[in-house]
Image 1: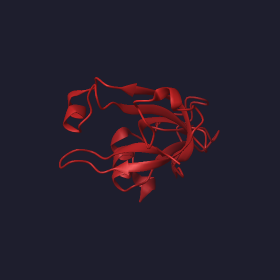
Image 2 (image 1 turned 60 degrees about the vertical axis):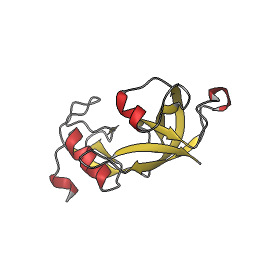
Image 3 (image 1 turned 90 degrees about the horizontal axis):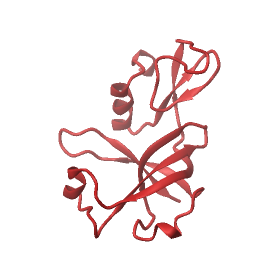
Length: 137
C-alpha cells in the first residue's frame, strides 16, 4: 500500500522497481515533488501523499556524456559511444533527471529542447536498483 511508505529515496526506488513513477504531493497546497520530499518547500506542510505520474513530458535540457562514471564503460559507453542525460519536465509539472534514449548523442546539434518523451524503467543488474530513462516519442 502506497500510503504506508515514507517519503524518501528508498521508497522512490522501490516504486521504480514496480514500474511506477511516483511523486510526493502536499495535501495543503498541492505542490508536487520528484524525487519525493517529506516536507513541502512551498508551504512547509508535512501532510504529503503519493501520486503516480503518467511519465510523459518534454525534454527541458540535456547533455551528451562521453567520459562518464566507470559503470558506464561496462554498459559500452565511452568517447566513441556517448550517451545522453537530461532534465524532463513532466506534463504534471515536476522536473526530473534521467538518461535520454532514442536520440543520437553523436549529433547533439540535432536534438531539440521541447522534444516529447515518455518514461522507461531500466531493468537493473543483479543487486542494483532500477532507474529511469526517457525515450523520445
